[in-house]
Amino acid sequence: MILFHYPVIPWIGLMALGYCFGQLYVNDFDAKLRRSWLLRIGIGALGLFFVLRGLNIYGDLVPWTTQNTNTKTIISFLNVTKYPPSLAFLLITIGPALLFLYAIENVKNSISNFFMVFGRVPFFYYFLHVLVIHLVAIAGILIFGGNWKDMILTADVFMNEKLATYGYSLWIVYLVWVGLILALYPLSKKYMNYKANNRDKWWLSYL
Image 1 (spheres, helix red, strand yellow):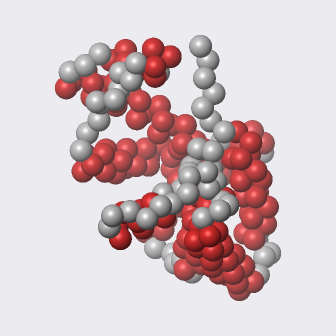
Image 2 (image 1 turned 180 degrees about the vertical axis):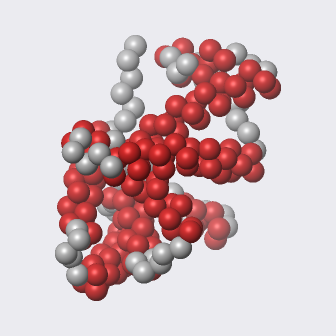
């Protein structure tokens, strides 16, 4: 059995918007005008999210509901659908991201340089981190007990929920996340430099 669990069409549309948005960052684009657009679109996206989510009629497959506590109600309100990405999900993620870009427009330091590496080779890092995470997961299940073959995501693993009890506490997840970023930084930076020094190789722009 072959299962396609990734909603291709919505993400292609979002990627197309990203390419259009990249025009704001061409060399001769006015920085003040760019910040103005970032602010307007960011606030607009957030505003539209709260309007649509508040109406609770359109924008997400799962309507939010009033819970027995205010905290749970807020969580229900913010619990939007990622697969496939709903309009509410895109608005609540893109809006703050654009406002963040607006806020750090003129920030230049060692921290921004660190994260800039991943921003310049995002697709490379994405594929690399998926591979490394899976290998680490296999190593973890071998060390702490379990069948490593369950990490090979076959129909049997999905149907019989063999990974239902697999996992770690949240602090370990964060620790692995930070460790993975630090571990992949040197390779990502090396590829970033290679990409910058080989602009004549057109295929590099796709990775």
